[in-house]
Image (tube, one colour):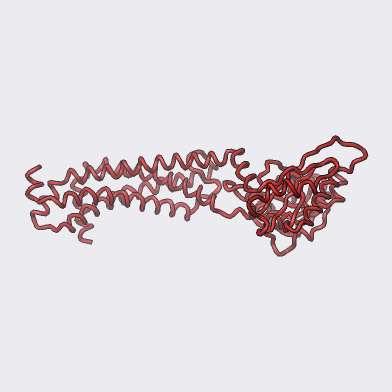
Length: 422
């Protein structure tokens, strides 16, 4: 405590010479907080569970080989024939068929959902067969299962957790018993809810998806989409997913799945689809660019801050020598220098933290801006305190290095020699 009080008195007597250093620390704290906050959000979002497992998951590449003719079965029927043959393979754990519903495919269908006359929200529609959630291992709430839901299209559906929470936010008293309309005007077009589906993110840099899930079977597909070439996806047993499986699939398995007007040409690993999706949407390039900019700013901040304290400590060699000659120990002198640096950092960090807090609160009230990305991590106490704490610790580490290295070098000189050089 005595050292702290003594340090404060010294800084007060040299307030004018320390003013520029306080301004520098203030600006550096703001810049470093921005870097830490941005990187923290990016890393948190990248490491956050997707809500699905794409390991050992493949999607079929199916192409139409002949024009529509009256003597060939409808494409929908042929797709279901491929699905049945695929499910009978011993290497396949489960398989599903869907329409514009694969994650990270870029193909989407959206549907308007209404709970009353004033609220209507648009969600992505997942229309698939009963094993769809099993293929991707997407969680389900215990109220009901997707496989047991009637295959009547959008007459029976399940909302994702994010979609359910969004409806509950806008509709008072909304629960699983609330019927959903497919039309904001016609109250006879109602859909029953059969439970909720676990959270799902369609990409590593995206937030939870707002989905509604409807089940279909071959009868429904032939009724509404007889000439549609559906998407087919399957999960391979881990023991069968070995290097060379894809080539063996093309050579041996694909010919057995071919239909009169449909040909199976390949089985694409879902990890390949994920990388392609991130490249196509620009998410991966954006994340890499943010990492490079953050690394550049970090290097410049560290060099500038360490250099400033290095220069400040080096210039005080005569003062250090005088203190040593008057009886101070090397440890006491080093403690004084370190305490001065940390007190200056604390004095600059307090107003800088208030500015950071106001920036985050202002952005949360007006929406996402280009300055601080609150999406997809909401700005709250945990995010703010973690960002400030990490920023202060990093700056403290740089300050300690900037003081310790030149101070250690100065301590090696004899007091008389240092004073003579001065």
